[in-house]
Length: 422
Ligand SMILES: CC(=O)N[C@H]1[C@@H](OP(=O)(O)OP(=O)(O)OC[C@H]2O[C@@H](n3ccc(=O)[nH]c3=O)[C@H](O)[C@@H]2O)O[C@H](CO)[C@@H](O)[C@@H]1O
Ligand SMILES: C=C(OP(=O)(O)O)C(=O)O
Image (cartoon, rainbow, N blue to C red; front, side, top):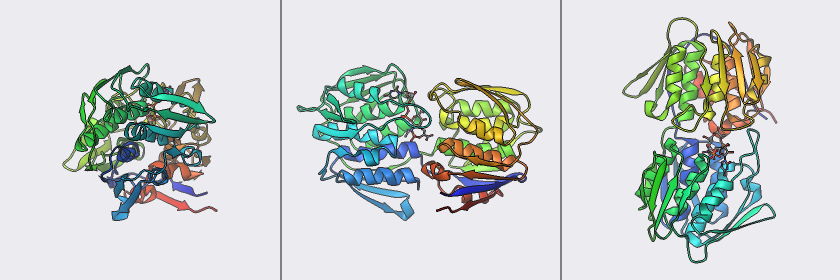
């Protein structure tokens, strides 16, 4: 398995291009299953998760071509000859469950393996299933698979999510585009990836209103057509690279960055003493004078502080002045980076879903283990600011969500290299 070696050095300066969003692309790709005409996605990120979703779609009979070095995906689902999403692919990536709604809506039947838990939490899919049931789906769980049927087609219904779920909102939204009549989704997720999905579905001919608010109304149509759609900027990759100059000093311009994608994250950076300015090409980020100030953070659905930036924010807080309290409210086990940061000299006390971080002057390089995607990159950020060398082992998680991380950080002056393992 590959490792990343980072050597703490001075300030970072230059530009970092931000890719299309993994989490948007992973829901836009299954939308191809709703139509027998081609769907083309531009600005696609080049990540292992995208390859996994391509393999899943291909296993269902969808044709997927990658053009322009993987930045353009052309998908055609004119002949779906398999309606079973197999455990062997689904277990690799939780977003695989997003093929359920579209397949069921288009062809009235689908069998999808349950994705199971993962390192950051149990992550059940009960809300995906309940929302589809509200549209008349008949579901049965057998031997680890969801067997779904809608013999006369799905019918519009009203469903109120008891907790905000990004994935369940996406599955229900896609399914509702082809259901008969009107569907109303209440307490829906408001993430930019939901708005991007709705934009793409509208280009395909869907009738959707209210995306970006907590109530989405969908008027079902008989069929959807083809479309070309650019994937929205990855707000998590953006936030991650905004934290690099915040931790190391210097000034970095994140190309393609937009304030409206960042919600509470930007407010917290401001409180911590990080200046963010909008430019013609994106966002410029620099640390104001002196040490970063400790700030408290609670993760919440958008526009609250994103759970996917909590680990990276913790890396920043490790060398901040004062004590910060980070509360993780979305996933029950998302502090696995804390003991690794402590190997580097961080002072962190984790009690349940709360981590209290007391900033130290400087971290010290150490060998550390990456336990999940965002934990991996938080250790790289911490290593960039540490004295000496940090070896981040087991970085395969990183490649799920960050393309060419060594190149992007190397180009702004970071000392970072990948060492290939067996
Ligand atoms: C591919 C993708 O887009 N992944 C993102 C998506 O994951 P994902 O869509 O899986 O996350 P959800 O928004 O669904 O999860 C939010 C909370 O709801 C719970 N829940 C969810 C579904 C369900 O059926 N039952 C249930 O109880 C989850 O366990 C969690 O506690 O949103 C998360 C929250 O912003 C992000 O961290 C992930 O990066
Ligand atoms: C948790 C994440 O992804 P996924 O939902 O694909 O596991 C993430 O992107 O941080």
